[in-house]
Image 1 (cartoon, rainbow, N blue to C red):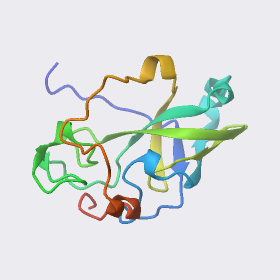
Image 2: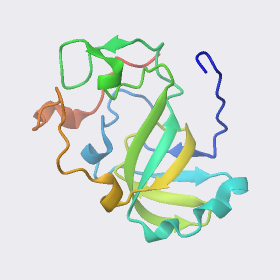
Image 3: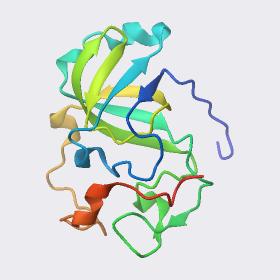
Length: 163
């Protein structure tokens, strides 16, 4: 299995107000008013059946504009190098992103979403419903990430992970 190539075909594209990584929120929960559209390609639109019954969705996408991956990085919220798998940095070996967004409404094959932290034009790979009973883990710990966030986090990302 090691060295095996896996290919993904985008199922859509994400449209957001964020044109560059600098200033983009570092997590969706920090962007309550950021709105955008998830455009699902017509050949996959049937898969959106019943999605509008959920308040939140997991979006899986490709970090198509991240810089060359490294196995260590200095993440947001820290000044110490960390292993990339202990961060949410976009410069990763497989460049997969995961965000939880609030579903505002469905308009055919388009989903209007809020709490968006994704660059405009990002390839969408999958959508999964957020189910609190399955996804919430009250006992979870957050490792090196502080339990309270500094005020500077509200300004969004810098360009440390951009090409």
